Image (cartoon, rainbow, N blue to C red):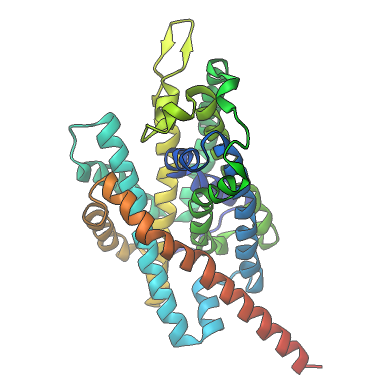
Length: 369
């Protein structure tokens, strides 16, 4: 018996896009922006988000070209069955790698900042078990969970912002445009890569949205919401910590929350930053893992994805440790390898697919005249 048909609303899809956008980015992207553009890091972030919206528009163009059809279907329809199958297989491998990468981000953070005596593999396992269960229940359950937890996420974010603003110093934002526009523009690449070039994964779950006419709007709004949160966090880091200090930190977002001081009574509330990150990262890993499981199911032409969850979960657990053993090696492999593949799968192939689809439609319409 096949699995029941999964459906999510446009609003739920918007929340999944937003949480995916924030995901691992809330701790990793602000320091990358600040390192590249110093005091203008938040401006680089704004430029990156603006270009990121163009990438989302490309994905929306693909979705609208074959409404209700999967991305792998589009690849086979565009490039032919065998080439499309081969490209789809490479996508599946990359999504599994992306799942391992994001899970490794969590392990590195937890074992260096919070649970320093705990082996990384146990952190991964503790996190992966509920994700595997959630994926087994389907994207509909994950979407409803996102809807239920969204108010808590926004409340924590609001609390963080309100109580950090009084700790800021405006002189930390100066000089504006001190590094010049070239530095600011080049500094936008981190946020462009993570999360926007990774959002091709969301094409795979867009097929479950009930109202196909609202998929594009939800995609854009969710992407902008996530980007705005990243810009805001980057701005607060510069405002409160300053470039000189924050540039020395591996996780300035986490340190930022330590600056909260309410009448010398409530202090060191870094758990807020940790909670924001863990919530959003849970959904990013879940979406990536669900997409990899569904990708394998479709590629193998199976009727149910549940039999794939355990073996793929074991693969993710193993490779999240063996491929990304620590944060230093993670930084090296991301700079040297992952960026190139993210550009290939997130921009080059989707753009080529979109162009071929448009050309085919153009020539087929001429042929009917």
